[in-house]
Length: 114
Image (tube, rainbow, N blue to C red; front, side, top):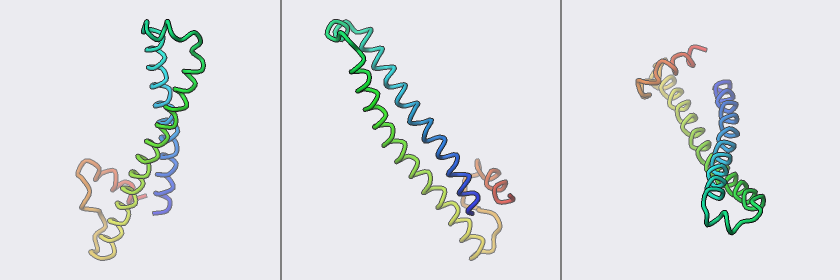
C-alpha cells in the first residue's frame, strides 16, 4: 500500500497547487473586472494595484484553507479504502474489494494487480 499511497500523494500535491492557483487567479480576475467595470469603484479608486494585491492575498489564503481541508478529506477516504481492502483480504480471504462502487471497481482492480 505504501507505493499506492505515494502515488496518491504526488497527484494530491499537484492538484493542491493547481487548485490554489486556480482559485486565487479566478477570484482575483473576477474582482478586478468588477473594479474596472463598475462605475462606483472606477471613480473611487485611482490606483488599483493595492486593492488587487490585497484581493489576491485574501483569495489565495481562502483557497489555501479550502484546498487543504479538501485534500485532507481525500487522503482520509483513500486511507479508508486501503484499510477496507486489507481487512477484506486478511479476515474474509477476498482478493477484491467488494464494498467499492461499481463505477471505480475496474480502477481498483487495476491498482490491486500492480
